[in-house]
Length: 98
Ligand SMILES: [Zn+2]
Image (cartoon, rainbow, N blue to C red; front, top):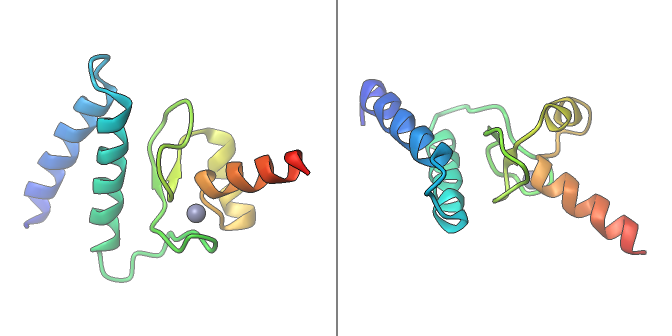
């Protein structure tokens, strides 16, 4: 795919993601698709050191899939821990359960 086609696809997926009528399941699919596109970019540097997935920044209320960062706090956290927000939330949750 060309960069232009990628950008058009990303724009369409963004609109779909933000639509009120889109289901949580479909939103998760979109996050994974965007992540796969990022992973297809040679030398894509933003990776999670825990799940090894490409990190994608998609504002939302919670993490839908590995590699997702959805909040400003998550972005800050990534710079410190190199962990995506999906993994970070999971690790935090496990610590709280102990
Ligand atoms: Zn991760």
